Length: 610
Image 1: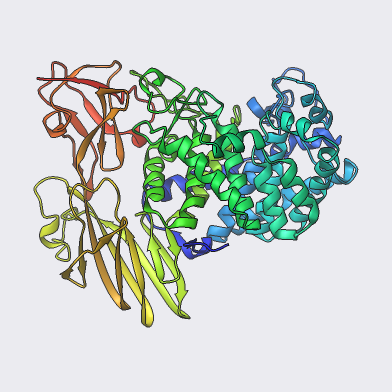
Image 2 (image 1 turned 135 degrees about the vertical axis):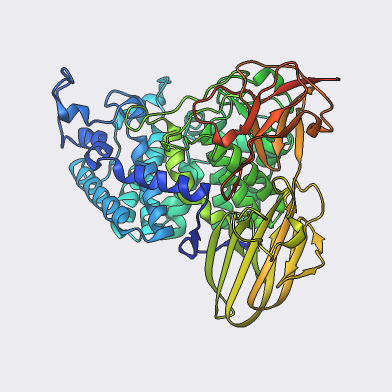
């Protein structure tokens, strides 16, 4: 198939100092900190390679070191985290060349090979094969396909991203077991099996088909096609409302990958119909999410779904991945706008800024508190999407097109690539205007020399080419812009030709500095079905009020600067993103939702006329 754009190679993008680099480092450290024997504990148990006595934990270091929660040897979902961990390790290595992470992951793959051999050469599950028989008998609570997908996914990623050939062999033999198991079922029987969460089995079999071209993977792609869901979507129905959300998003990934490896346009129509049903027609909370209590909200009906289990992290991560599929096919900036909103108010907001741990949900009820997971005693599914999300992010920043390079996300980073066989480096960093305490930042000039915090994102792009090279530099213009963007090339302001959500500049680049100003504003976003209740955003960033209850604010939502004012806005070289209410019966502070750790907060507030 033909792609409108493709992400640059992962190793070509380096993070620079920012909140994103800090959060990535927390994940990398966590991945390395986990003991290999504990990661493998359920695979060892299933293969009979380890045995533990479950007596008192006191004084028993071996039991103390086990992973608990969903990874407990008695848990229904045991073993699912290791696949996430392998995928995260593979992505970290692909992005950074981190040899320590790769060595640890290679050793884990070697131990999985021991387990597979002990199990007879095919089975490589952390739980018994009979679980797959039981789901045909309506054994509630078991989701073995979901669990085993994680192992296959991790092995595939170790092969594709970390160059581990043994991992592909293990995945291939494990897939043969599934081929023997799945082929005898009638279509009716298989459709019934697919009603029980299968995770990303369809996607991973499509990936393995692309890697091997083996017929068995085409067979398995046919077996794992969820016809009932896909047909309903193609007919324009809404099969999603009140359905478990993260069951279906990986199935949309599977359809997307099947389209890429087969070229069959029907798969693409399924993905586009899914996005329309899940996102476009449904609308979203201010954070960008569409789920509460792990199920899809009804279209544009969110007021009754504000609770303590809003926005599951897995759904945020997986919808970002689906948006990336669609973006690569279309180059439509709307998908990157969606990604940006969810990066700040999902991926960052659901990771503790100090410990790096995950919040399964992002509560949006009044007086909410985030509940953080622990390092070794929970291992929810969202622990898995956490460790995968941050290593994946840099693949969303820069994309290659036939004409040049698109900058899709504004994250401090550096791209090193080749264009027309010429070495090219593009560095982006945020400029804080007069934020430096010693220099006047003359290259920014009047744009940001204001008495208060800058009212725009100003991004400095340094383009360095080994020789003059002509190409398109395509800059996404976010949907939150409060005024037209401005550009300055080598100190001189140049016109911005805004078209289809981008500013495009084509010229021979050599040693150039491009300054991009993206004006932002404080805005109030209402609930779709309760327009008198609003959340406040600073550009794409949701603000959380440090209030333990829902307070009715006085003012005009169309003029939110009459309700909130800047607060505690400056320290040293930094501009801070804090606000406070003004002229209210009770005044309190606001801060970015992604900076909230253990505070009690409220996001949505009724607003009444003054």
